Image 1 (cartoon, rainbow, N blue to C red):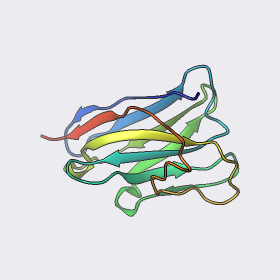
Image 2: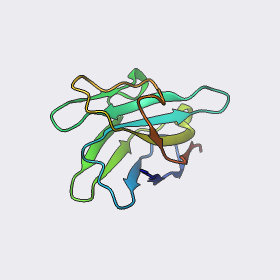
Image 3: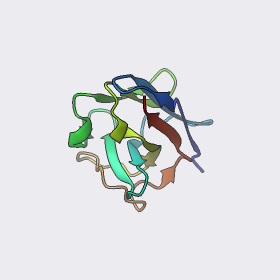
Length: 129
């Protein structure tokens, strides 16, 4: 059973940066399609970014394009989400999720638990002055 753990959340001022990390104990995430999702207060869970298996690209929701970067840390078998120029509307609980199926197409930002079978417990990101 893959257990995902997110870290790196916290309180940051508008315009600041944070880096979220996702790791699985005893497993590398290198060969999973990975996604970052968030749930803002009073809102449904939404996709933020995703990255496919090696050789397949990534995707971002429009509201974070140019500000957030998702990348793999092959040395440690982790994935990260680097968030720049944070805005109050980015305040949310952020979750990483893993899809074990070897898809050949681009990853999906839909928080489909039939695809993203494994989820972390989430990490709080609060953007406020």
